[in-house]
Length: 163
Length: 163
Image: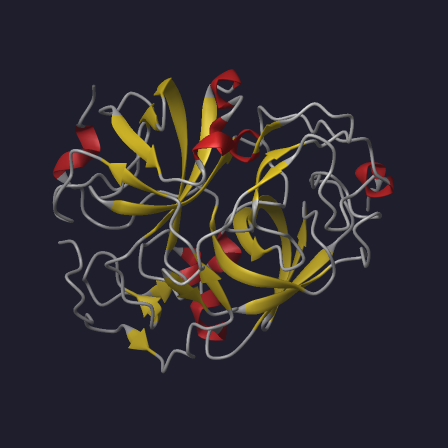
């Protein structure tokens, strides 16, 4: 069963420090078919339902050239998640695992990441496949998938450094 | 040349909204060999120099079970980056491209992501290869690489939904 903010048997919460080290500005909104946590997929799939990413002003100009990429990395804010669990029980069966060994939405900084297929762009709206988040999820960042991106800037000394 | 916070020919800045939609708590610190932006690699490599990720309390318990994963996704705060450019000129040659079509550290929410190889864990410190960030970069999140992770929680209706 999807978490509705309960703490389950065996789970451990901590007194989380104030989240004031840095601030985020939501840059857009994600539209998906999933309006409840019990309906959303556990992980996105590239042949999943088309979803929409709406970019807010003043950031729409920053989409220039994005059509060149078939796959994008999307960062979003998991706005319904609690942030204070260090051990979690995904199967609600009393066995637990550390938060950093899970891709659960419950984490100290609840940021989700997905790699999506870019289907099309229409003005400030991208149609993509591969998301797993709820309808209305705030957008934090958008960038070309690392595997498809070649830096345009000149090389740096560290580029060739190996162990 | 790496940006030292200048705005280059052709680039466009905006009046960025206040970054108050959500707050981050830094959960650790990243140690790398690179102490200046002109030295760091453009992108990390899996055979790159070993780097260290130090987890702060109260989050060390959340590392439980992380040793099971060979590759981790790391999110970090690019603390030296300006946040107000929508068009950028990576090669400083007057040609520009939108921020969301670049993996530049300069972005409205300057969060970097890397996939790293986990070499070892010693208490609160992970040794990894594949990072590209500066020494002292604040850590935001840490999770198993999506390709290596199988959800432990029971299936959900959305899991099998296709277009």
